[in-house]
Image 1 (tube, rainbow, N blue to C red):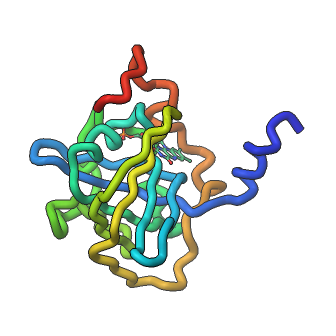
Image 2 (image 1 turned 135 degrees about the horizontal axis):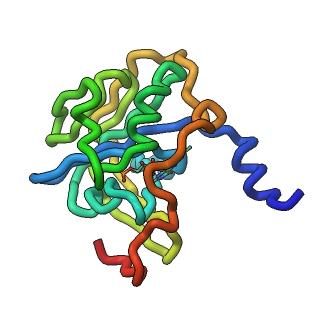
Image 3 (image 1 turned 90 degrees about the horizontal axis):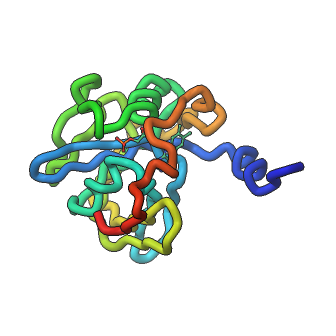
Length: 173
Ligand SMILES: Cc1cc2nc3c(=O)[nH]c(=O)nc-3n(C[C@H](O)[C@H](O)[C@H](O)COP(=O)(O)O)c2cc1C
């Protein structure tokens, strides 16, 4: 096998999420496969956003993130937020949403979601930045819903490849 690590990551078939955020002047969001709870007490959640993405640049300037846990029925939203970039379009004009607590744009099509306050980020020189956040509002409407998983979105071509990040590779937003 050429790439056992890559094969392991695919075999794990993790659940997919859409992360949204907004500054005073801009809103954005993207499909995310890299995410996990990362602390119990205090509770913390981590998402890894690509330096190439519009969403990661916004997240530096925003205090809150919307974490949408996708259901199997959310493929259309995954495609919109995973294959298009906020560098080119405003994705929120293409889907039902509302402005939630702390000004976070929330997707009406995703019933299980969390609003989280960004507490820290880690840039260790790789192509993604780890944003750590404190859940401040959680909404669980469908506890038994089947998640949308990595294998379900293999048809989606990312709006940005990780190596789309700017040259020279300044880590400053
Ligand atoms: C299966 C899949 C998983 C992805 N996982 C991530 C991820 O964990 N973090 C991330 O920043 N982008 C991820 N992306 C890429 C973004 O969702 C995609 O490039 C998006 O169009 C970026 O939008 P933006 O420029 O508006 O932020 C993934 C895309 C796909 C198709």
